[in-house]
Amino acid sequence: MGRLAIVSAIDQELRGLLASLPNAQCVRRAGREFWVGTLCGHEVVLVRSLIGKVAAATTAAVLLEHFQVDAIVFTGVAGGLGAGVRIGDIVVADTLLQHDMDASPIFARFEVPLYGRSRFGTDALLSRRLEIACARVLSSIAAGTCSELSTVQLAGCGVAHGPRVHRGLIVSGDRFVSSAAEAQALQSDHADALAVEMEGAALAQVCHDFGVPCAVMRTVSDRADDTAHVDFNRFIEDVASRYTHAAVLAMLGA
Ligand code: ADE
Image (cartoon, rainbow, N blue to C red):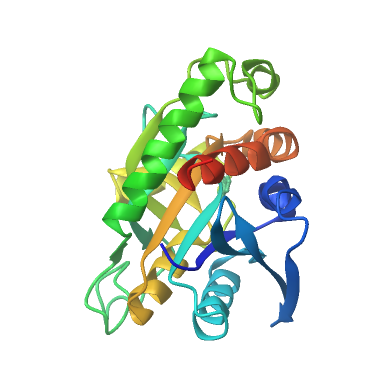
């Protein structure tokens, strides 16, 4: 796999993994702390990107140019959009799109100008590895053998069902979506969208530019509706980092 970058937008999504890298070297660049170390025998760089598409693009560009990583995985939370996508479920992206890109009428709505496309794909192999790792984590939670996360902790976030892994489209934009009306508008623009967040499509575009594989894994913290801010805050404090920790360790073969 070579040198792998693992990126989350905020501390609450990354702190579990950071705690697993006690001897990592911290390198400061572009206002960020890049933690370089070894996890399960793999060379990794962990970094908090900060929130939004520009922050994600800056972080990805530094990882690719300065740290010369061979692949980037973005992990964190998202608002669920798809009908069966519930809080506690995991979405692994096949493709990503910027839902707030609009240079119409010069270019088609959502198309990234001069790229001739609105959707950017993730790496099939890396995404499949991540999907398998996430499925293993969910099975171990259900069996009570996951050391990072339990059904009791999930129940504290209102997750009473057995969470599932979904694969498909994630849409990104510089907006926290917190009304049912806005979530419905996104669904009518992108019928196949499973989840909404604020960074993934930017990462996918930068990785496309550099020809480097990427994958995006998002745990559903809220339904992007009128209670999204409450659900989001509870989820990121209690379980978001545990999901990231468990999934990345499972992917690296721990
Ligand atoms: N990340 C988690 N929940 C989100 C939401 N509702 N909108 C945008 N990004 C999110």
